[in-house]
Amino acid sequence: MSSATGSKVVVTGATGNVGTSVVRLLSEDPDVASVRGLARRIPDWLPRETEWTAVDLASDRADLAAAFVDADAVVHLAWAFQPTHDPAATWRTNVLGSIRVFEAVAAARVPVLVHASSVGAYSPGPKDHAVDESWPTHGWPDAAYCREKAYLERTLDTFERDHPGIRVVRMRPAFLFKRQSASEQRRIFGGRFLPGPVARPELLPFLPDIPGLRVQALHTDDAAEAYRLALRTEVRGPFNLAAGPALDAELLGEMFDARPVRLPRTAARSAIAAAWGLRLLPASPHLFDAVLRLPLMDCTRARVELGWHPQHTAPEVLEEFLLGLRAGEGEATEPMRGRKVG
Image 1 (cartoon, rainbow, N blue to C red):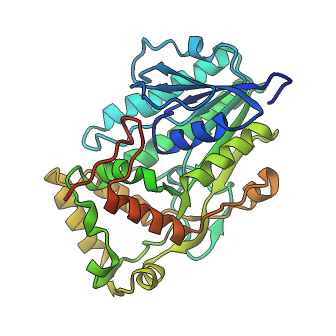
Image 2 (image 1 turned 30 degrees about the vertical axis):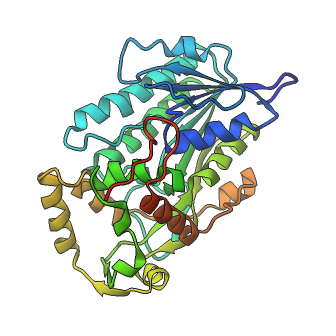
């Protein structure tokens, strides 16, 4: 991708959890001449060689092709998790907005598109061994997040067929955390008024051990490095991204010095469904259902073809995130603003 004068990269969703890490990393890369961040609200934060453009992907009036002119690559990260009670709204932003991005990439003749897919795009899979990128990507149909990610996988299948000259890379990361994302993710998944100080191991005498609750995590900065490597390397197709080991009740119990206690799926889901129905909890029970069914991912392809190696283990990622949660950490963008509650 790079040239004698450096490359020009456009990043959508540039002020969010992944976007801030990707923009910061690219702005420090000597092979990148400029970064243009697209976001609904322009931040005060301005890394070197970075400019901002206000764009709402949910609007059909957004002139994305103009924003992509002369770009060497587009990194598409923009995503809306809320409102979970209005799936039509997230569909407009996530699916229809992404299709506008893809069409604009083709119209502006951008040679490289790196798209943020997710482990959530995968069909239900095993928890006792890892699967590679060939595992089916039909998602869990009852969860809007998974349904939307899976739909875009099919959309990109058609896009790649129709535009073989565009190098398309699909990143499928595990759950992404960093200290600075704590306040944003608390608002998205736990609610605006969930007190951060409750995230203390000493306040957890036991941990719920729910069948199927075994997941992978990754530091957002490690994911950003994979995006950077994908821009620099002539690769195509999907890449799994996760750090080890997988997080389950046994490992978390050791981390927090708490005793795992078996809790039936139905009991846990009923509690989440009740809180979601009363609008006390933003995260839906449908997403909970999907999490219990997500496969574990094999990341061999990213290691071999990108030379990618995460610098943080999954327990380190979780510990850093919990520290940020207690401190109300954030960043100087509207989605990532810090807020300490309680």
